[in-house]
View (spheres, rainbow, N blue to C red):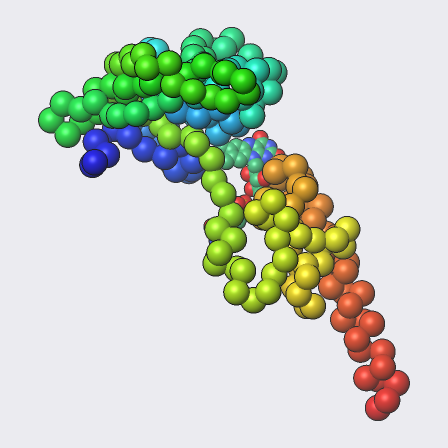
Length: 210
Ligand SMILES: Cc1cc2nc3c(=O)[nH]c(=O)nc-3n(C[C@H](O)[C@H](O)[C@H](O)COP(=O)(O)OP(=O)(O)OC[C@H]3O[C@@H](n4cnc5c(N)ncnc54)[C@H](O)[C@@H]3O)c2cc1C
């Protein structure tokens, strides 16, 4: 159904926060629920808590030990007062007059390696909900040209060359990366060196023939 007011994307929230000249005008709830278990969930929850939210809860569908965010990152949020709750899958937003009033979750448990709902449901009150359930590369947009993929990301060699001659790739969109800014910058550097080498290599026979 319709998403009530007060529910937003955590990455958009962080972008707005980073770019706000005056952080006091950002809309911050009292009871905030962050849905997800990665770096974005940790960042959003920690920032919203530091900006004055009274009660901030990260709700994750699996156990804490399975969170993409490391124990260190979980601690970064927890020492600032963020509560992390595990085994909760969101099933519905509760609302009053078009504004979010809570999130209803289905409890899960692990059985023979699979995550299954226990049948129990619970509702946590919230006046702000941030969704941090990950971003993925839309490989389908790029697949037409014959680009090779690996685990849903662009396959590259050490010089950041893709399977298409004349096309290099780097950063979060490539397979085997670490999803860090420093890695994206290093890829850019490696790709630039490889592009220069390719252009110079291509130029030699041309000049030799001229
Ligand atoms: C909340 C959060 C916190 C993070 N914290 C850290 C941190 O503390 N340290 C760290 O090292 N990393 C951190 N990261 C990861 C870091 O942001 C990324 O690894 C880095 O931005 C990757 O750079 P990139 O250039 O590969 O991709 P991006 O920075 O995602 O850039 C891709 C660009 O391509 C654009 N784009 C997408 N599709 C198209 C299209 N079809 N046509 C044209 N343009 C398009 C996008 O709009 C975007 O501007 C964090 C990420 C998030 C979300």
